Image 1 (cartoon, rainbow, N blue to C red):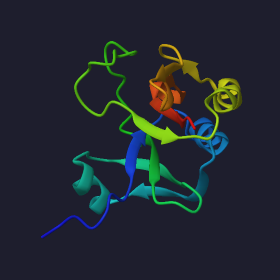
Image 2 (cartoon, rainbow, N blue to C red; image 1 turned 180 degrees about the vertical axis):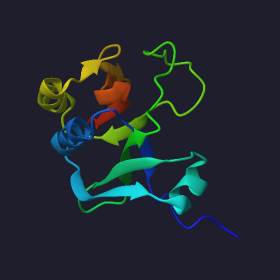
Image 3 (cartoon, rainbow, N blue to C red; image 1 turned 135 degrees about the vertical axis):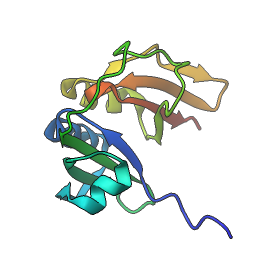
Length: 146
């Protein structure tokens, strides 16, 4: 038995509209948005009285999707510390290849993006950076050089 594909990465957010706007500015497209609730959903995620709304974002003309989820009940839990360092256990970041890091950062800053460190050059291969977006989401950007 083999894995067929990675379908999506799920990210819990506190403001679904802001997260959609952020990922749209990054270059993703909204594939769909829908409420999620009922016994089947509660059983899948292991939460009683679960009611949420999801938005599926996709990369145009490429594989890769992100499922953004806003929990209405029960409310989402904020980790402690709220701004976790890079060596925190668990899902850390999602990386996107971009044409132009500086342009991408300029477009995302009005949506709350802040650099975690600095834009850094890796040899003659890549410009790389980590940035924090809505709900504390960490993204990595990579711009291939030459």
